[in-house]
Length: 90
Image 1 (cartoon, rainbow, N blue to C red):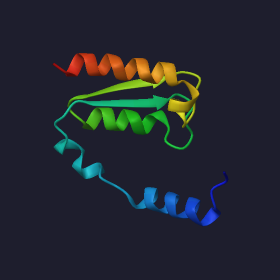
Image 2: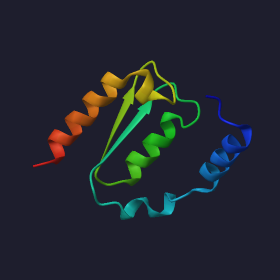
Image 3: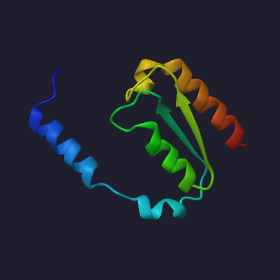
Image 4: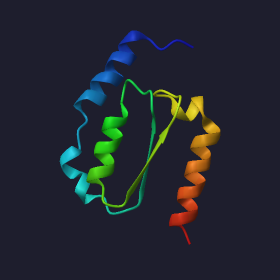
């Protein structure tokens, strides 16, 4: 199924308007940030910014994938999520 251009436009517009960067320090829960090393839409520098501004965060950059890291390397993503959950749950 191909997404209509007007929906794609609205999605990108909403993403462009969404900005909580000034509130990152309010996040107290553990956070796992997963990013594809070759992501051109949200490059690793943004993930690194999140890591440096969210106190209890962990960053995982997965090699040889782009923006759709969870589709490109689902096994790697799932393994990182499982590892994170084991560390942060009872």
